[in-house]
Image 1 (cartoon, rainbow, N blue to C red):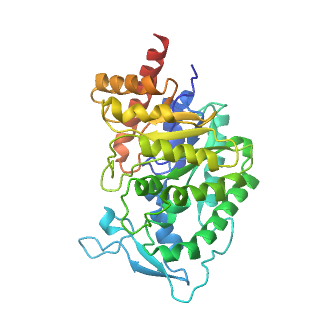
Image 2: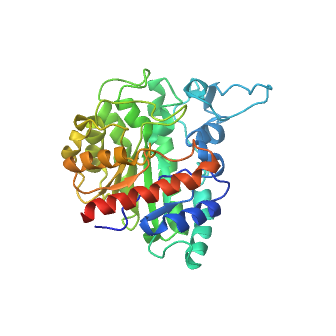
Image 3: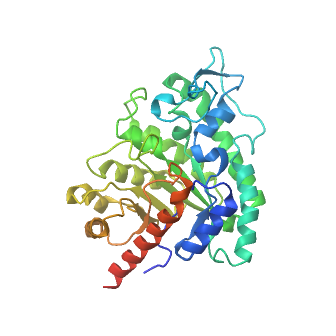
Length: 359
């Protein structure tokens, strides 16, 4: 039994990385292999930060739609639900969308370097255990593009430039953060939702290949000293989950192909799970082929009924004997006052899992 059986996903609705590191380090730090900074500030709204800061105003990109003003007529950039999402298109005549200031343009490097200083300081102070790495969560290409660009003809014009910028961000991070102290979690939410046929504008041919290709374009370029994993998700905008598949078959198929296409060691894999005790839902877990990657099931939710939670875990273990636990998604859509209770749920869940293993 490994004590590092708890995965913390990216977002935590607190004001600063220090607050996130403090509360996570003191409540669940001993169970974590790596710890995120909470994706505070604009990152708390995930890829909408890219819409607001990167795509909007780019000379080769036209803004088709943005979130409507609030009830007082004041502009806002955060969508409340899917109907308020940003929408863009590549301007006619543009041959390729490129992003300047490679290594910093997307904003992830800047945030990571600043947060790592706080992380390292608190780890020296004993708030964070010495064996915990710093975690950075990044969106895979289709999560960053497909939800905002609805014309598939735009994809070959913008995706290569985005991936060039993302590779540069990671390499710049590794210049300032020791690679052996870094873990990168690829967020693959739009990809999984697309595979569950939830986006009507995306091409419906070669769907698996199209959603896996970014892993082949990005992951092999990450230094081998860096821990790498994938966080699959069903989305939370407007309430979790945004899709409810009948079983885990597509998630498992997608995960297997991600591992195959990664071109390097994959250290962890996160699969979301619904609140169900239907054995047929969990049965596809027996088809996972992820090598040595540690699997974390996103089963820490609906914790009011602990007996039902235990039943969900017991059924999953029939098809996947060894796994860790996580929430189904980041905590960014929750309120800050809920964070302590949610982390207590994480601790309670992992203690229940360890008790079940000991029996």
